[in-house]
Structures are given as C-alpha cells and as structure tokens.
Amino acid sequence: MTASGTPLAALVLPSAPPVTTAVAAPLRRPKGPAIGLVGLGVLLVFGPIIGGMFAKTAAGNQLINQFAPYMQSGALARDASDIHLIGAGAAGLGAVYRSQPIPPGQFPGLETFRRESTAIVGRASSLLHRVSGAQNDYQHVSRIGGFDRLPFLLVTCGIVALYGGCVLLAGRRSRVVPAAVLVVLASVALAVYPFVSDLFGGSQAGQRMLSSLAPVMTPHQVRQLQEDFIVLVDADGELSTTFRGVARPGPSATEIATLVQRWPAVSSDLASLTGVIDDNLPNFNSLEELDRVPRDVGLSGFGAYPWLLVAVGALSASLTIAALPRRHKEFT
Image (cartoon, rainbow, N blue to C red; front, side, top):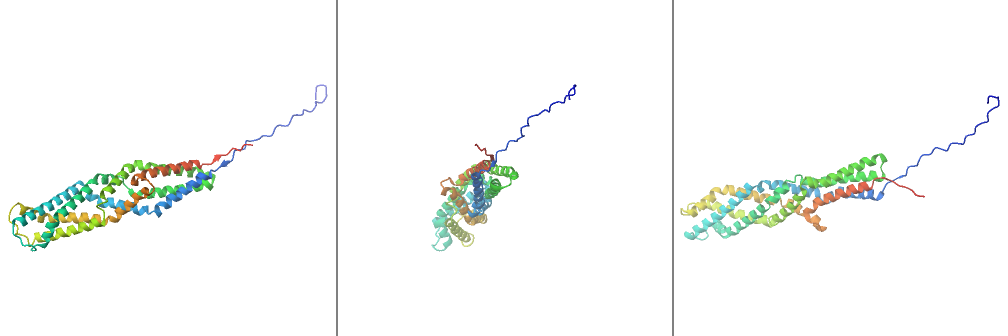
C-alpha cells in the first residue's frame, strides 16, 4: 500500500528453471579381455598339472641335489686319481706277465683285466671328462634355487588370473579394482622372477649340462660301468690273494701293491658314482622331457622358460588393464 492508501499491484515473477544434474555415462565392461584372462588362468592352472610339470621339475631338483657330492672339485680330482691308479696297476700287471713265465689260465680274472683294462680306463676317463665338463654349468644351475617352484608360480598366477577375470567379467563393481590390482601384482611377480633368480643364465647352463651328460646318463652306460666294476673286483680279488707274492720286487710290483692297498677307496668311489648315475636315470629323462616341450613348438628348449614366464606375466597384466570397466559415451 502506498502512502496515499492505494494498494500495490501484485508482482508476478517468472518460474525458476528446473535444477538438473548431468547423467553419468554408463560403465562398460570389455568382455573380450576378461574372457581372455579367464582362459589364460585356466591354461596356467591345468597346463602344468596335465603336463606333469610338478613331477618333472621335482625330479630335476632331486638330480641336482643327489649329484652335488660328485660335482665338487675334490671329488673329481679323486676320481681322476682313481682312474690313474687303475691304469698304473694294469700297466704293472702287464709288465709282470711279459717278464715272468705265468701259465695261461692260472689267473683268469687278471687275464680278463689285462685284456679289457685299456677299454675300462678309456671309458672311465671319458665319463670323468663328461662330468668335469658339466661342472661349471651344474654349479650355475644349482645356484638358481627352487627349480621346482616354477609350476607353483604358474599355477598360483593362473588361480589369481582366473579369479580376477571372473570378477572383471561379472563381479560386483566394488571388487573390480582390488581384483585387478591383485592380478597385476601376481603378473609382475611372475615376470620379474626370472631376473631375480638368475633363471636366464641358469636355464642356458642347464641346457648345456643336459647336452654334456646325455651320453653318460643311459642304461647302456650304467650296464657297462657295472660290468667294468665286476672285472675290477675279480682282478683285485686275485691280486690280493692267489697272485700275492708272484710278482718279483720292482716298480711293477709296487704299482700292483698300491692298487691293492687303495682298492677299497677306489671301489667305493666307483660304486657310488655308478649308483648315483643309475638312480638318476629317470630324473634325467624328466629333465630332457622338460627341455623337449619348448622345442616341440619351435623354441630353444630350457632357454625359452624364462621368456615364457615374462611373456605370461606381461600378457596377464595387459589383459587385466584392458578388461577394466570404462565410461561408454553415447552420441545422439
């Protein structure tokens, strides 16, 4: 109302516009990468199991452990001394036979030893050469540590990838990021393991070790070593009993006496080495089967395993990142 008493006209204001909020673009879950991650997880879980990788890597680890005493420099030097002693004893026996009238057939074990000693010493020297040649590579392989962990790493990464793939494909949104982080961490651990464990150098050394020992680690070689050992045992039995005193005093008699005196230690070394080779034939075959798996697909045997771990880790991490939900913008 104005001062003169006239009522004021009603004020009409325009209606306020409605308050609106922007609608967020919907989240889209890429199904392809998530399905690929699930498939990779299944392959990593069941591949090592179906392929017998657990048993084969355990067998390889057992071979490495059981050969440890025989791959030391002291043991190899002792083997070389044993072979030299056998050769010297055989030479001394041959000199006695040439210088003394010993009737044929009087000492059948010694005659067999004389006849086969050159071949026996040659085979033993070849064996020692093979084993000594593999020593450095063996030491490198033994320093890897936990060779039988490889299938456990693959299966563990597979389980994590399988879980993460399922969550990324159809899990609750709140679990997506934690699951993805878990898969990426497991993938990085798998890819880094060959570098921190020296698996690159160790796998190459293992490949060379297999090549060096392959001619030795056969049933035929074991049978030949056992037959040679029997010849040596028979010869020592006659040298230490019926032949004793037959050889005239001199350098040849001294060499024969030295062989007889040191035979218990020599026979123990030979029997132990033959035994460890025989016991580990199945383990060696398992290692060769592991080496053949990459070769069957055109890769380089043992040397491919470190790169396989790196590739699997990188693939798993890449699929996980690609499977993360993204905003999907719709254009009209």
